[in-house]
Amino acid sequence: MFSRRMLIVIGVALFVAINLIVITMTSRQTLPVNGPEKIFITLTAPFQMLVQKTISFTAGIWHTYFAAVQAVEENAVLKKQISRALQIKNLNRELIKENARLKKFVDFTTSVPDTYVAARVIGRDPSPWFKTIMIDKGETHGLVKTAPVIVSEGIVGQIITVSRNFSRVLLITDRNSAVDALVQNTRARGMVKGGNENTCVFVYALRKDEIHSGEMIVTSGLDQVFPKGLKIGRIRDVAKEHSQLFQDITIETSVDFDTLEEVLVYKK
Image (tube, rainbow, N blue to C red; front, side, top):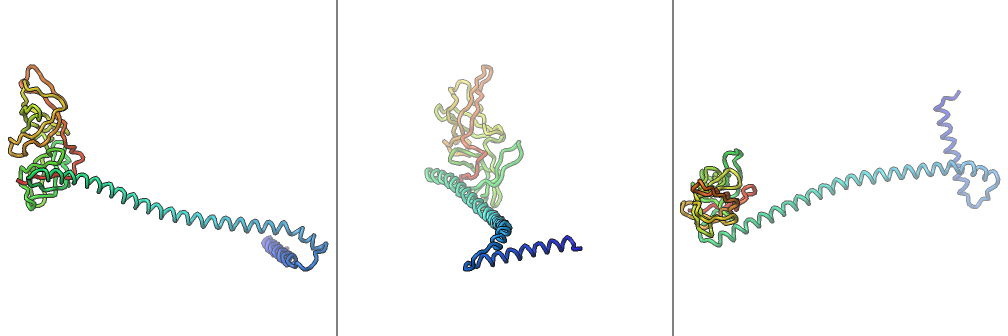
């Protein structure tokens, strides 16, 4: 008795032999095809067609597999190129914004005769009770304590601590800050104090003074810290109580302290 495996091997061998015979016989173009050969071809042609389709199908799958592998590799390369392009685009955008900020500084410093030192903001006080920033300039750059810190939009604060290469700046929004100021139009006097938010209050403005929302508050120069005429902010709310001597005035600062990146320090 033949085993099942042996029968399969014999069947495959017979099938291959038949196909070889058919190929050999059909390639003899000069010989006439007689009756037995026609029958033989009729019987074996379907098997040949099946083999051909199987080979074609296998080759198609093989090519599809390699094409998929190549597509995956190309996709990985393209993703890296796109990521790099996005990084370059973002870097260019940052450089454009930085250039615009520095241009404002240049325009501002050339419009006044005083000497300023440009510095970068490198840190912020994480405490909600204090509003200070750290800058990358110090004593070696000519900075001293109480030096005013400004930007083109208005005043930022004053230096309270100086080291060799760094300084800490007290922002005007800190509750410990006070700046002598006046209303730009009416010249009404008062003092700007911090409220630990991006707003300040204009205190000691007499109730009799005509002060309206939208007016600009500027430095008076009388505190011997900030030069005269620098912008502080615009009046947002004005309240007059009959029982009070002074008005309650809220100011929205000209400087956006949340986006502050570079500052100018006035060298006395």
